[in-house]
Length: 361
Image (cartoon, rainbow, N blue to C red; front, top):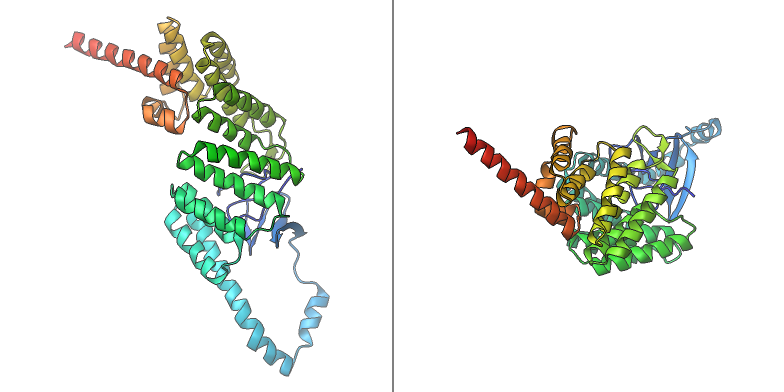
């Protein structure tokens, strides 16, 4: 099953996630063009689709017979309503463009204006919550997700699943791992009840929560399941409108699984998995850095240095983030043992560089 939401930011084929705002689509009122040139819109809390067709001849003829008092009434009532709708469309477009440019302050202000005119629409709360998450205002996002849930009826299972999953991400932002885990679990339940398939993004996020709670075997189980689901997935829309398997997601989740295996005490097994992943995705900085740490721990300094050199200079993104221990643990979510292994290797590298410099002097 492919689920579409009339999200401000994007059309998605996954009930829990949105494609980045620069995905291939065009705004049309409160809807968006998807790759098949159909519109996906919210009608209340249901998803409806229709082609982008212009007015029919009969529509034009009916408009043509309006005259006299009918025209006066049209000008007196319909035009102010149309003007308000056009104004809201303009504000929504401002929010969309600001979000695309990662101007979260402007996007949030525009959505606040929309809420001032349409305060009972959960859509605006959800959109602003997503903006606030991206802007690192997690407490504000939690409040908006709560308001969106209050305005979303119990029978709108898929909508509620998406909102609960969004709230879980905001809980992660404030390091409330158990609350995040509870919400992700509830989101999976609601989505399944609504007829949706298990979402690999959410499964990986559940793994992240277990990881942060120090439950390494449980985390590994979810990471491996997520990787498998990504490889089975067919309906994720790419930037050019095509649908492809999300092998990038599969690699990322499998990498997480290998890191958990090392934390569980099987560093030799983790090394084999990391090598296999690196062969499949040679430009994965994550696995190159992991290999450097694991090779060093197993007394293979040349292999460690070679892997690290490739991560730093052979891949466009480079390795600088992996030199930041806070980012490595807090953002990338490496488990403690692997973070320590890499830290020890990097310290050895720094010491060697200092010694080399002193010998030259």
